[in-house]
Length: 203
Image (cartoon, rainbow, N blue to C red; front, top):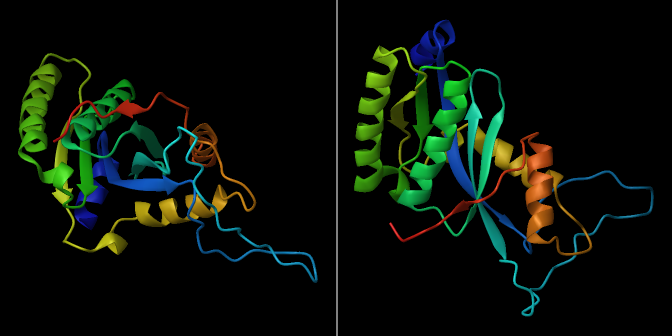
C-alpha cells in the first residue's frame, strides 16, 4: 500500500480513504473539555420529539484525500445502499476529473453496499468508459478499489476524522436540527454545502 501511495504522488492519481458514518442528533460523544474552575461541562441526555419530522440520525458519505488531506463529504436522505454509493462515487470522480486527476485509488471496507454486484458492475462499466474517454483526451477518472480486512476500522485514516468531527459539532444543551447538523459538519470539514444524495430504492 505504501508503494501505491508513493506512485500516486508521482502521477495524477489520488489515494482516497472512504467510509460512511451516522451523525446522531440525540447521542452525545465521549469527550474531554476545559471548563472554568468550579464548573463542569455537562452533556445533557436528549430525547426525541415525536412531533418533529427530522430524523434521529443523518447518514453521511466521506472520503479523505491522501494528496491534500481534505474531506469530500455528502449527506444522504436515507441510508447507505448500492445506488447511493454509485451516486457518491460518480460525484467524487466528477470533482477529481475537473482537477485533471486520472486515477482514484479507493481504500474502503467490505460493507455490503461496497461489495455488492451492483457496485462491482458499475465499477467495471465506469472504468471501461473512463479509459476510452482518456484515450480521446477527455477528462475522466478511473477507480482502483482496495478492500480493507474485515473488522479493521483502525486501518482507515478517515475514522479519527469522524470521531473528532462529532466532538467538534456537539451541542451540550439542546437538540440540533438536521439542517444545523449538516451545516456544522460542512463547516468543520471546510466543505461546500451540497444537496443530500437521495436513496431512491433498496440495494
